[in-house]
Length: 419
Image: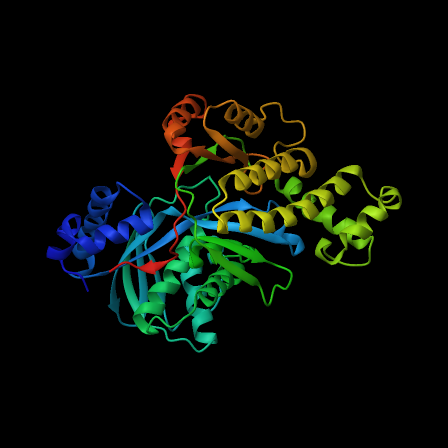
């Protein structure tokens, strides 16, 4: 474990400086050294001197908008914002104190799921521990103090970040670091599905556990095809922008995308669009249109095209082909806008996402822009030339507020022990 003297001198430690470049990018050493020292101070006051540090990133959706729920393909990536934990071992229980949140405490002898804990962080800890126990993985107690700059409201998966963090602490402290990344992702998904009460897929947890850009093929949910690709676009800056809007009344509109895609699939005698041959779909549109809506047909068209874009996008990232990558992201954005139709809700006159997208397209240096995540309200993602990023952020901040515009990078290492 690191002691106070070591943590206080992080800004002068060459190994930490190299780790900062990998996890956070250039010019972050002083900020991160101060951040780690601050969390060490908080931890030591409550749990005593000494500690081991872990980092778990947020994630973004790169390509593959509304494809996973129909066994499609996605590209996602871990990013350079994270939750950091200072950890010491303890007996029989896990205690997590997160800056700005109520403490969490779980006894390792009490791992039954509880409906009253749905939506709470304690459920995530209990669920991860339950998965470890059921699958013969070692469990042990620890006390953790955490701090996070994984911003909320921009679709970067703060809950998955926390889940995978708990997995990695248990992996390193009690399992010799031998648990593979996909198992950590599955343990985290289990905690969120069964204990937290959120029926999420495996996309978020995989991106966070794996690091870099993750290509995930959901054709077989039990045996996902996963490939990790390093991100090497040095001239591109990634900007997330929360354009505003209320998600609270949009559940039906999110659900309608899946329902309509599955409704088209049912016309071919299967449950998911992935089981429909694209050639058969187009050959039978004249008959399909008699049994479903034009919107459902266009959403299916988006699905087929988007899966092919994901494959091409993965190749462009692997080959560091910036021009091709940006062209594909713009195509994905237009398909979401015109065919998937998830850039604003029915009857919405504010249209914050289209406003952000179209202002971005007029901005010098923006090479690609699209809706991010579920859509209808909230976030867009822009890829901006490095030399123009500062101007873009300033101009967008004037419209959407500086607190809603975030510059991030892709991080090529997933959840990990730092030192």
